[in-house]
Length: 266
Image (cartoon, rainbow, N blue to C red; front, side):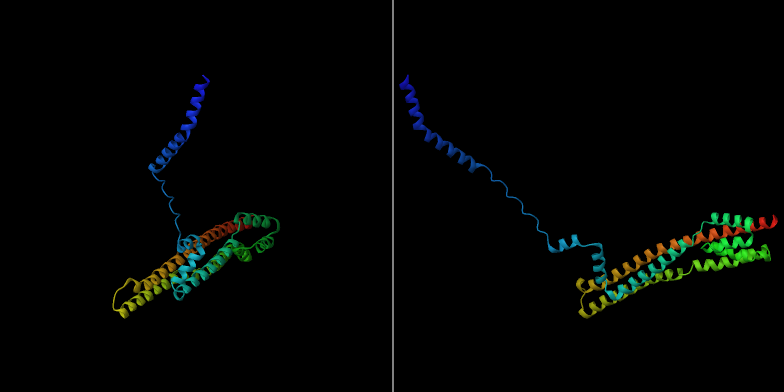
């Protein structure tokens, strides 16, 4: 039994290198027959122009388009935008400061009339800012001349206050009309330059006319954008003025009714 076990051990020792070599050869054969793994795809390389386009801000884009459109033609359009916005913002601030709570003012005037008479009512209107209070002051100053004079004074001074409210709107309207005209002028000059290039070269080539056409299109777009922006501010100012005028008319009628009531109760 011991001899048999020793014989098996000897056979294992003798054949183990052969078995190991066979296993190695089979592994190598499997490695060679296996399909090679695909190589990793190369990372996309971004060009410098792509990087600049992604990093460009809105301000940088506007600046580039301004330069491409030729500052000679774009500068007048930009000036129209700046001046128009300055006038529009001044009007908006003034109109908002001119807004008065007419119901509250009428209540104070009526209370002052009952307690202190016309002079007390004048003090109330003089201490209040806004066109409505100014109209009230003018009407109260004519109270001694009769209700008819009060009404005439209110109507006359109301026209004056309306003119003050509309002050500056004509300039906004001018810039709204002027900006597209300047843009169209750049368009015409750009097209003339493009045709001059064609005439000088004696051939129609996209590279010859591209510059002139770009100037033409950019100046037109700039003029239209400026006109649209200013038109929005202009319409807001007109709507605000209409609201103030309606308040003045309603408050004036109420003031006359209060004065008639006060005169009848004296």
